[in-house]
Length: 164
Image (cartoon, rainbow, N blue to C red; front, side):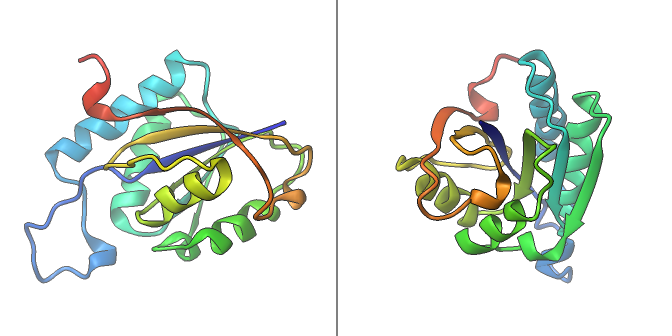
């Protein structure tokens, strides 16, 4: 059994219209929600062994803030492949993982995150900014990931639904 955590990047700023989409930073709400979700990981014993993040500024800042708040001791890998990725790209990234890793968290973007949840679990879930999905996968090797990997959606947490 493998555990997949999906964290959509926190709320980003549109203040500077000259910035490329890839370079948009978190806004003040995003700066609050990212560590909030990290604390949620810590308090629910869901701190991953590895975090893989999109290179987009808002995603990498979310990954770093959540990791710090979760007392994450592992490595954060950054890849541009997760920037606006689709299902196949996510699966490709996961297939590369060492089987020593049992729990990984991807930090990325919509609509890909919602698509991944739906493809793996058969359940459509809204993934607003900083939403966190917890999926159990019935595989022993990440190399076995494919369209037929029928995961079980354990929960989806959204920042607005969490206590203060």
